[in-house]
Length: 140
Image (tube, rainbow, N blue to C red; front, side, top):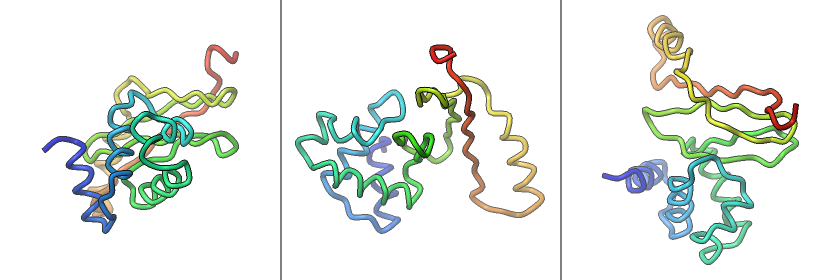
């Protein structure tokens, strides 16, 4: 099963209705090569003809609440959204100057700690999200 159908199946298991807007939003996030803002998603070719910005916003909130997508960014700046995929995660660098977001392209140092915590506490479904904040080279 491909990632789109897997994600839609996960949404259905969480009690979310399968709609064309939901499918197009997930497909847009999958096709994107980076996290995207509400404005970018709402104006994307797939979604701009399917629904309005308010509908995209409500979908993003619902999917964030159900941990299907992750909200990134500084609170005073536009939020960015990225698809959460079971068994795969990304850590991000966020510029405090311009708000630019880049994926960290290095092995995650927290996996061993996560395994240790899982073993010592008995937690199931344990995961983490890392966001590093600083000033990007363009803003220095």
